[in-house]
Length: 213
Image 1 (spheres, rainbow, N blue to C red):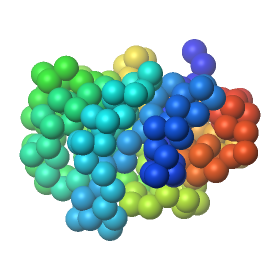
Image 2 (tube, rainbow, N blue to C red):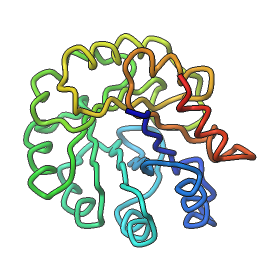
Image 3 (cartoon, one colour):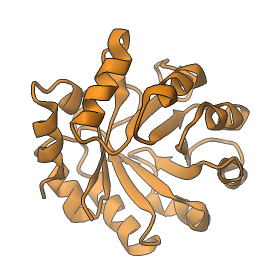
Image 4 (cartoon, rainbow, N blue to C red):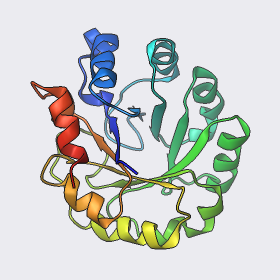
């Protein structure tokens, strides 16, 4: 199966968000990655459910929504109602991870879990049967444009060996034409990339480069 590409709209032009997302879709994007940050779980603030709803109305690809927020249980219903196709929460939250994953699925969305670079990947094992997606962070979450951390490659391989074959293994952080082949070789099935795609002169070429092993 060809590697899926989910451009991170964090690197898009927010004054022209619909146009930028349409360009990404036309260039071959399989999903759009939406980073939601609350300024508490990570030191940045981005967007909320209204923007997801607006994107859903004009997007032709699934929305891959990554909740980097402290209390996602308060907002799951809002993001599901807004049209999120995938909703990913962090393993590191203090809330009931299993219960939140079950709620995501009950609301009709696909459930994902993410781990920060310093979190052992084995911590997700108790939730394996609930997962549609695992998101391996290869930078510290919060800001775009950081350098790729190779320690994430072993986590990708672990997911390939220990999770069901239909679980999407996604990688986010410093993904470009140099690091993408490493991720694919390790077992990644989806790559999240922001500045490399939205900053490219030729977005179609950039996405093709990411898919090349």
